[in-house]
Length: 235
Image 1 (cartoon, rainbow, N blue to C red):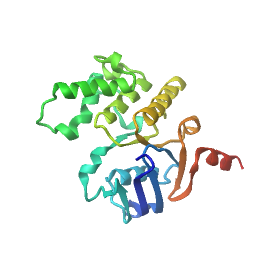
Image 2 (cartoon, rainbow, N blue to C red; image 1 turned 90 degrees about the horizontal axis):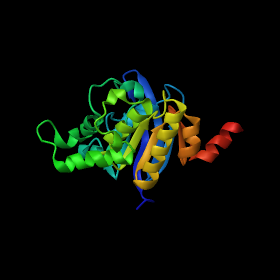
Image 3 (cartoon, rainbow, N blue to C red; image 1 turned 30 degrees about the horizontal axis):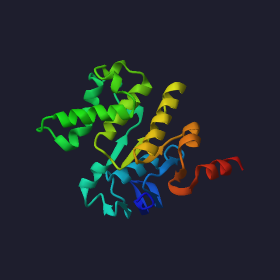
Image 4 (cartoon, one colour; image 1 turned 135 degrees about the horizontal axis):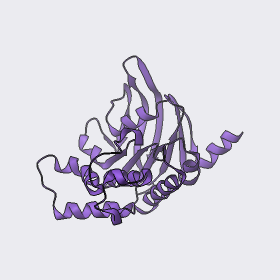
């Protein structure tokens, strides 16, 4: 199963009124691949994530996830989880860490359904996967940057996704926290059978996690192994 294609980006051109962010981009991702997306600021990386999530419809081309169009089959979006940049998260959000993770159930519960014992167990299990279960009951705002990031990853995991999208997961963290997030993402890639696509500028993260690197500069300018990417950079 792992060798099969999970995601196909076919001839995608996308952007916003008056601005083309992606031009004729083509690539596919297999189950359980660890893929880093790199490129300059404004090169189209964030737009690519929005297209993959089905939040932005391409002007041209198609995106298939498990052979389905996310624009036509919106239920498929529940199989994709997203972790935004730290700057997009309020670090002083007044909630306990388990409350933050519970927010990941919103798509499943909506506003009306109550949280069951089974849901509470899933919250604990999600926190266990990122080594944060021992801190249940702690206010989110009291955590370090790396701990907050792990809780947010747990929030993404609680929906049992097939694909995890990370947007600059180590930016703004100290070295110890960067190493912790790197190990967490490696564990998820290897143990949880997750396909992970991460937008990153972190060279250590690239070298120690990514199996494959895709470079986006409006167009796709590189698609190959991590070792090939760094060899190319050194030449």
